[in-house]
Image (cartoon, rainbow, N blue to C red; front, side, top):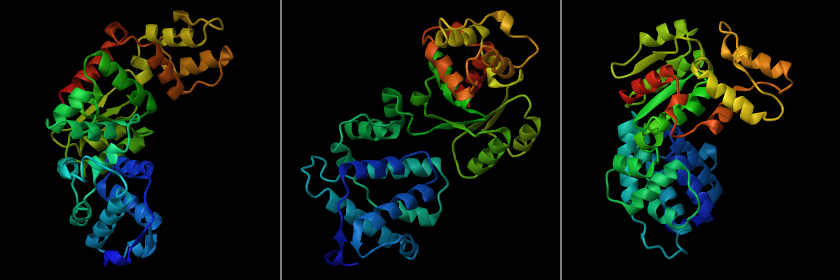
Length: 332
């Protein structure tokens, strides 16, 4: 294509920042690159006009060329110290290939030279974790994993945990941090699947596409799911079962009471006697909330309440069952 014939509508700094944010999230490359590039070309090229349908007819080489031209033109009015350095582009490509199994077509698409350094110069606001990592890359020549540990950026990802629910997703990183295993420093991505059946689907989907270790955490009633996963488990992956029920069942009672009493101070005080030993914690909590007019018990909200009262230096508020899970994750 002749660049003299191109008519480009410039991307704003926020649009460029959003684009590199989406390109560096934990998501399969063939999905994120095509989505981002389609959006950019459909919105910012007036000549030629690139609809989603036309995008599908373009070669990877043509797409890369057009994407590079849009970014160059969008940055042309700015006085940038980085002068469109492409060091981060090279690092990102290496990291993506270390994390994912990538098809040849997507590898070609990933050759579009994205001026990460130049775009990051345009923003001094608070950045999400993946962009904090990119920003740190512009300031340091240290290896990516050292930068992640120094700046707690979580990226690059080195291991993945799949859990059934949101409670684990919210609280496991909090408990781990108290036990000096910060997920953001050690590159741990946690995924709440939304149910035991979905856990198996997520694991089997990731297993064939992801090169890093995966841990699967299941509730005690997920025996059939555990059996299905165990037959497909890779040698370096782990399957962990909560033997006492759900994640809420291995939370210390003291911590649960602290969370409820803090949230409903002057309205209600929960006691040990409100919890019958043989009833699962979620059912007990649902009953406590119902009887005392505290509203509907919601796991996500309750996990946030637990997080609020956690003392970052007090490991006594972490049960032995949770400590065992975290120790298993450390050795993954």
